[in-house]
Image (cartoon, rainbow, N blue to C red; front, side, top):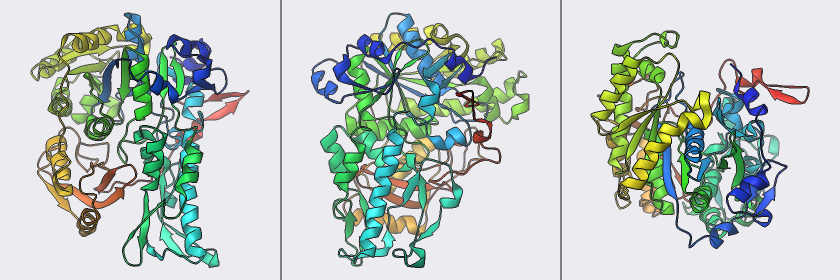
Length: 554
């Protein structure tokens, strides 16, 4: 079987100007980045503001395992399947981060015959958005430390600076650093986060327009004075220059799938340490340009989907029509305790145990009041008996199971799923979105609501540092903000070793951070880190440039 990158490099792409024309856009609506990539001017949204929105479909998944689930692949394949049956669909995704691309898994642009292309560009530098976010974030850090060095007129407490630096790589050696040594500034301890965890990334993804972007940048809290007063990016006079760096990055990116279906890829926050959704701009653009917008939220539904509903939809006023919950039988058997090497063998007992993970995610999605279809990303080793067991268990919860074969067959393998999505969206009444918590609740109540209702915890334990932060943020007037949980993606719990549907456990909140510009508080749970590390054998070891072509990128 050909690798993903080999399939992508053999694809017949059409010029992005033709992709744009298919959406009703002309050359004045886009900025070209070569032949196959473009940025869409944000003015397009203003021009189309009175056009009715298309249907909004969220693609999410079970708790991820090394066996793979194929959420992005399903998103791409569903988009192509919808076009196969005569619907005008737009695939909307997040931009891959260089951290995991060179770290744990390689590329993140779909797989097999359900990919977005040019795959190498999308996975690497793309149009430079993440570099712009990195630079804007670090500019703020540099100006802040320069202020401390140049006399510190604002009387900022060096021990109460909350703004780290970022880099878009997995580099655990930067989790804790000391800067300003040797008299080259004010010596203090700080840290690096990965860029996709940056508040600037969240701001770019949640901002509704340029003015909103600038206002959110103004509100970023970088530290506090010696007397405890908050210090913002506006106070250190850096938010304007940050906005200037983000001007082009704020425009969504237009590319295509292997079958030339339009794809808008923009923003890249991780769902385990950030809010995990592509930009509001991209989603709104797709809703105006197509009949169907197929979007996604990172990792399992306990993370990405919850944040999609409770944060993104709440802020942007979005109303989803349908959820596609992706699973593989292989992954469910892993949740049932079967090792990776034994996944090709039929094991109904393990599947019956592991399907509890799927059931919990399905129950969670139903809490939001949005209809759900379960998509099984099919593998050749899946047996009829295993599929029948899944249909029975899922059917008992009021949802249908659809087999998807988009990895091998592209859009044709997604037709059945596309037809079920259309049936739900066009025959059922528009659902009323329900949130897990109300904004008027206090911070602990919101965290407890997510922990008990979504994760299945018995309760929440707060460390001293977390309680102190809650008291402080409440005093400063931020208690009404949404909550963005930072938690392991490998389990419904905060312990990555607890597979399936963990029971009889409590969530531990170690600390709570404030993203005032993005508009959320961020509880850090368990041992979660906002700077990932590299595995023993990074994916970077397999990537090379041979005769001018990139190889080994997944």
